[in-house]
Amino acid sequence: MTYSAKVIVCAYHNVGYRCLEELLRQGADIRLVFTHEDSPTEEIWFAPVRELAGQHGIPCVTTDINLPENVARLRELAPDFLLSFYYRNMIKPEVLELATQGALNLHGSYLPRYRGRVPVNWAVINGETETGATLHYMVEKPDAGDIVDREKVAIDFTDTALDVFNKVTDAAVTVIGRSWPKLVAGTAPRVPMDLTAGNYCGGRKPADGLIDWSKSAVGIYNLVRGVTHPYPGAFTTLAGKKVTIWSAWPVAGSGEPGRVVSTSPLLVGTGDGLLEIRSLQVEGEAEMKAAKFATTQLRNKRFN
Image (cartoon, rainbow, N blue to C red; front, side):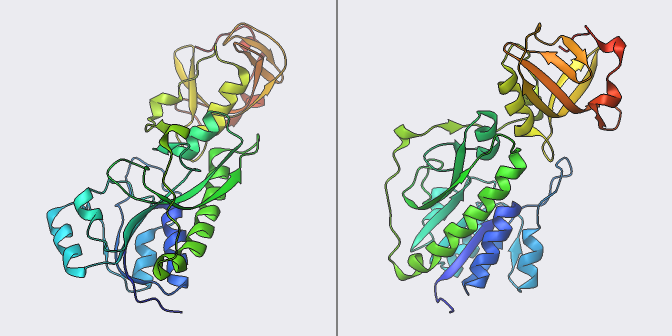
């Protein structure tokens, strides 16, 4: 079925690609796509929105949607809907108002929990057991508008942030798939968001991956899996060198925080329990299994 509503899509990352793909599958009349240039400092492991738009003959813009020339172009297009899927720029109210039937965002959490930046990473780092994807109307305040639909996903204790992101991506497609026909028909629900029932998280920098060995083994493990590949990783120092820990597991036991108590397996003391390091990377070297790194001389050495 082909819908007559004119749509502008702002999209990036796998969520952006997959949700755009779903709209196209449903025959949405997409007039223009805004996306981003890939950053040379970021590991690009996700699908290119620009290529998908190009395959379908949809014009694609990589400059900020809020720029005057882009606002003028939108005004001329007179969209019914503006949809944002992991677009990284805050969209100004004057732009949101150009969509006569609504501007909506797909957020990677079960709102109102984890409003703000990098919600999947934060949920894993904080040891949550579930998160989700939420489609909501955009207002000036980030992730605060009326909710149209949500889908929960489980976070298993063995999941990395990438595992959860893939689950959330699937949930996002599910939400868009069932919500789009209702939006076009004018039958989609609008449930006010109760911000008091949620929380807001800021962005993360690579430096935020520094391990605090006084925290519990479970807490450190959650940090490791929350920022492991394809993210920058959790790190510590040993003998003045940066060591990134890519894989670990919490185990029972005790030891001075940061102190190596065993080399086979490689166990390090924490504020509560022991952390088994399974793979790591010393600054300037390739990633390796802990068994290759650990030697008897390492015993009693301290990570800082």
